[in-house]
Image (cartoon, rainbow over all chains, first blue to last red; front, top):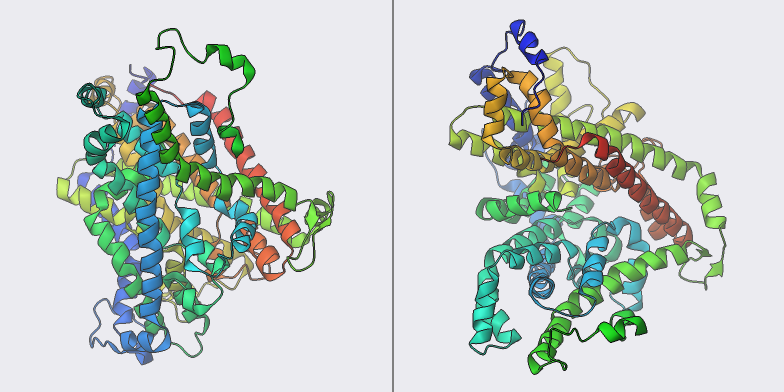
Length: 290
Length: 318
């Protein structure tokens, strides 16, 4: 099993670091890295609580000495935060629900139903996982234009319903469930629909949670498609609104923009806290199953 | 698209009712097939309309001149000729490749170092805190984070130059000099993305059986030596996945350069996807934009294929 060559014995004799780094050094190193990782986020929150006038003053403050909500009032005055949040919520929520439905159904069909061309259809689904949207965006835009869906929220929502990765994930999920359950139901006279509805579907919740959380995380933060599809301000989503807010930096203020960033982060952070486990599992399997 | 519904080729027909089954499909089989069709319809239809058709469409469009307003004119290969003669496009491919190499190398290195360090002995709660911290940036929006980073990297007022001032480093023109701008885009991208590789590595390391580590320890392998000769070979399948996904993602980079530098200064941070965006949606040259898209797609496929080929030599499966 072991791949260690006899040579390592020799190396050892002049290697003082027998057990790698000392525990305190490891933890100190990790702490520094964690601070570097979270630093920009902490700075964003604390600066959003400074008054617009002193937001860019140095030194930055970890905890604002004189916290002010002026920036938050400012951001509501400069952009229609409620409308942006509503658009983002609609788009993200409907996509997440839609993906759970399409992936749940298709995943079940691939895992538990017999039909013609099953293998080739599944291969088609897998193959599309390899195709980045950025590459096909021009024809996608034209397809949506021909359906009069450009500059509408539906134009963001509908194309995101089918999810190759979600389908793959749900197929694995259903394959992991015991086959006997379905066979027992069939023997009791349940048809294919009843078998799905009352036996397997109720067990699928954790898998669907992964699909939903991943969809939320991705589409809440999505920038490329909204930038291309949505041309009128009333259809902007939060990331688009925030970038355009920074665009008129001359009039705006750092803390106002950062207040907007903080507001837009709240749902993503909430999902991070509540759904960390499905999120982690989803991200990991997104890689491992490629 | 209709292929899926048409009866199978004649050759398959005689085999269609296998001897084991009842000669005629039962009501249940028909029910199963109906259910399968209904269950698959949204996904397959969606994939055909929004992925398969656009792939074919990209290739077709790349052979035409089209500005959406006038009717398309056949261009033959001239879009590709124009693309290869266009300095900006060539520079964008070079930038994207440079970005990919730097970003993926840094991302894998940081993620691997952190994941390995995290395997050391420490309280469980501390481990979870670190793990959460490292993947937190992944849940944020690349666009919003770039907005934040644009302030932090500001040459005159940014916190980063202010901090560097304490160790005697003169203000760095992070976003305004050609060389530094690419490095800044890489840093901002890696800051947000390394958590993905990190999670993969943590998972991969957890999958390595304890006995192997124990056997290695018995053989006298510890510390860095153990990692190099035992852990890394066992982790190589995960390394392959992390680098393949990392490369595919890096080749599509858009948000960070768009927000941080808008491709500048000059064209120094203009990436291929930025060129696709600008050519199609700012200059309305859909044919040329499609040609660039097709080339990027070919590049992604080629790099991935090359990687799998190389990996046959270096990846050890248990």
